[in-house]
Image 1 (cartoon, helix red, strand yellow):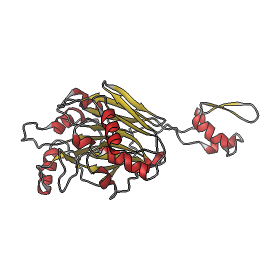
Image 2: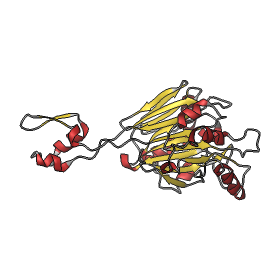
Image 3: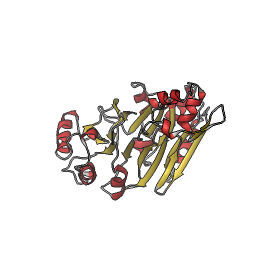
Length: 311
C-alpha cells in the first residue's frame, strides 16, 4: 500500500501545505487508488505525484467542511476528461455530499463518461466492501457530522505448495488457480480435492485508520485499535485550547507494551494548522515523540509505504 499525502494542512491552503487529501494506492490490486477527502487544489497536487486519476476507484469523505471537499468536482471532471470509464464510488455523510456533487456538476455543465455511484450514510457501520477490503465508519466529535474510517484488508490465501501437488501428479495449469481460490476442486479424473492442505499459512490482511477532524472520543480510539497504520489529524500543538487531540489517542491506545517495534512507523500526523510554519515542525514533532517516539509528520506530496507486518 502506498499513502501519498496530497494535502496536509487545515482550514485553508498555505505555501507549505495544501488542504486535506490523501491518496492510497494498491499496487497489489492492479494499482487501484482510493482518495480520502478532496480539498481545493487536490487535482493540481496530483500532477506532482505518481497518482493516476484514471485508477481512482473509491473516494471517502470524512465531513463536508470546505477544506475537505472543494476539490472534488474538479477531480471528478478531470477523471472523465482523462478517459476513465470505470465506475467510481463516492462515500460520505448523508448531510449533503450527494447534493454538493450533483449541484456542482449540474451548474458547471460537467458530463462524466463513467458511472458515478454516491453512497451517503449517517450511522456507524460498514459503508463499503469489495473483494479485498471492508470499510467501517464511526462518527467522531466535531462541529458538524464527521466520520473516521477503518479499512480492513481481507486475509489473502497462502502460497500454493507446488511441490506437494506435483507429488500427487497434479501438474501446473488452471487447476492451480482453482486450488488457491476454492475450498474444494474436482480433478480431471473426477477426484475431489480439498484445497487447504496444499496452501501455506494465510497472509493476514493489513488494517489502517484515517481519523478526520475530531476531539478526543471513544470512536477514534475504536477505529485506531491495533491498526497497522493510524493517520490522525494534529491541527494544534498542546498549548492551544483544543489541544492534544492526536496525543490523547496515542496515549490511550498505542502506548502499550504489546504494540511491538514492527509497528514503529504506525502513526502519521497530518491536517496541520496554517499558523505553524516550516520552522515550527521540529517542535511539533518533538512534542508528539515525547509520547510516541516513532511518530511521523506528513508533508505534501510525500509517500509512505505500508508493507505487511508479522502479527
